[in-house]
Image (cartoon, rainbow, N blue to C red; front, side):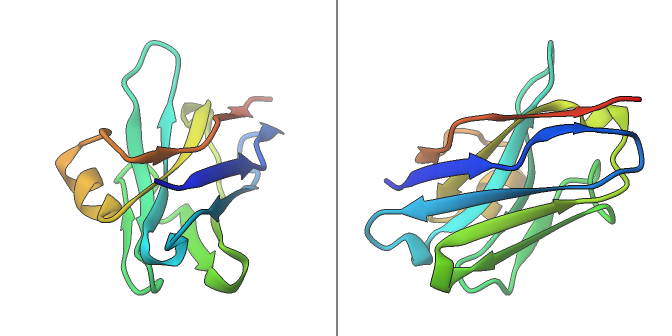
Length: 126
């Protein structure tokens, strides 16, 4: 299990951008997939993006594909989620997460994940 610290949320106008960060610590952190889930009020938690350990494979939910970009810097033990063209429907609490095969978990719609960071609020509103 890893320790994850997420940051970067805030209030932004529709069409704006934000970048979330997730710093991982713990043994073998660079061998884990890292990504983000989000949960809007009254909705189920949704896996939106993940990246594998070497950064060569990514997963994006249809709801964010083409607008969000995930990346990681293993030298800094940090993953990033660049969120562009934000819309009000992106308003949610965003949680970074890590697991040995997070990409597969997101494809299954599974949120039984080994490691979670604290949530960060993203609000898209004019």
